[in-house]
Image (cartoon, rainbow, N blue to C red):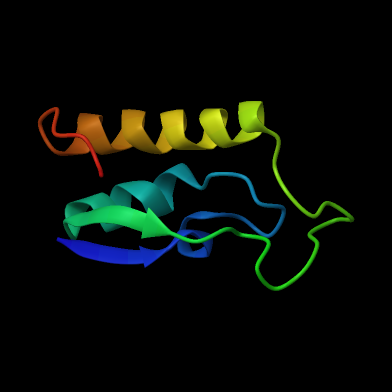
Length: 74
């Protein structure tokens, strides 16, 4: 299993880029690390709320399971 930095999946405004998630899933990436705010604020925001994290992780998980036969990411 390969792990990559979560910023690789996001747009410039820290939204999930579905196409990038699909591409990394096809390459068998299985987990994503770190916070997208490690390099400082994005659009004046320093962190996501718990609800925003949940939304991001849920969307990544949905796409991952669509692309790989129902196997979840870690």
